[in-house]
Length: 396
Image (tube, rainbow, N blue to C red):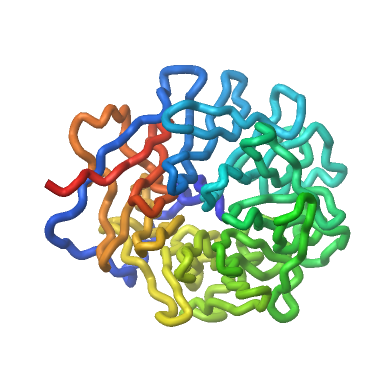
């Protein structure tokens, strides 16, 4: 759940020399870029592609002229504004996590017209401007209804939705009414990992590890497997809420154990799980509670935990998605906070910017690779605010 901006706070003095670097390999794949947004046009400025399904439909967000952010789709190149859960013109919404279904269902977060009596800021504050402390809720956008519907909480104020599968199940986290002593102001209420659906307004809570009081579900597949985090309430944005990376398999919780064990009880965050049960994300390392040096990882029940090699010169990163062929995408940063998108396949991590065909129309380098579908199409954003699709060039 760590905000992207925190990658830019990495400190030069703490380069993790123990991190393995990617080796060179022959015949890397090449990608052709489709630009979805023009940063010089006010209607598509500062666009971000965070999700791409197997139909090639991209979801993410763009920034309006009044600086509000709206969740959006690009359906075969055409922008669809998903709007928000309220009427206020300054409210924001976003599709922040990859959404893996081909039903057209889109999930994300949106501010509402209601005001949060606790003024928490909530998890949404890491991704949406919210100066008035509006309530934030998870949403599902249905193409048939062509509008968002809010997802219920566990009786508390706020909620956060990540992915939706082909069974119309959505995962995320939601507040209950418990005032937890592990919460750190402005956070007040405890929150739990939840599954919404498949029936409308249906919500069920997932179990946590041991004595943990709060947690979040971040991704799911169609096989009854869900990944997320388990830990303390704290600030509701990671840190010690992500003491443990966990997998729920048909509702039974299992810890994905960071090899550093109790020396790194923070930021252990799965981001995506594919249909084979392969998981990717980012994790904590010792002496790094602020999450400035997190390395990306992949995990499976059969193969266990593996660190993904960083690009040479980078000190931290996150694996954000994996497709069913096992290809992983993510991003990393150097000590100056410069972001680099990468693709991992066959044991090698490569900078996506080095694999782009000339004449792509990009106004700046790609900063984030955030999702990949089974056709090998990658979505992300550039340093100049262009949402993009990078498609594999056919072999010649």
